[in-house]
Length: 250
Image (cartoon, rainbow, N blue to C red; front, side, top):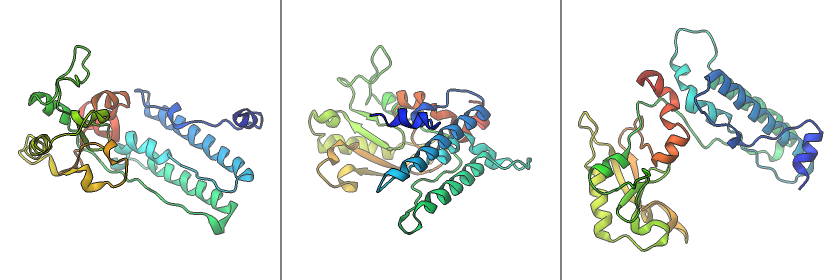
């Protein structure tokens, strides 16, 4: 229970990822804060390594800056090294320090990738327009009168009402109806929004697969992914991510 206090007395200030969100501040300020958090996490890990048998270190700096500073990767008119590449430099050095602790038993892996985005696509808006989703007076999903809703960003999921919170089980006709609706969605240029729609049982196994979204979609255009549940998307300013706002005026 005294871990954080003991670290603080040694001049080590641990920082959680959630201490930093992009809230519209200047990007240079956001980047400096991201470095501060990453540095505190690394220093904590190096200190704890002296007292642990096994340690997992999650280095998230590249993830944090890639969401909002990707536009620098496209700027050909500057000699400045993009902040994202500086973040990889930080990670390389961090891995070197961590591996030096015990070179024979260190495993390093990356589980995420990034790229340029053109736009986000709100499936919830299409569900509302089709009458498959209804909002209440507070602008939130009215679960009593809605059939389907997007799940949080990155899940690429659509949850059917009767699967929500284990209230029941969506019927095959409901699943087929919403699946067909998703397959018929089109961008303004007439191209499909969705390449494939999967039922969760096609992708997941195990006793807890019922907690996954009812349907999971594969976007037809990876540069135009689903926006995700709007309340959370607004909270994390998703439409400001990956430099999209620089070209679109956001």
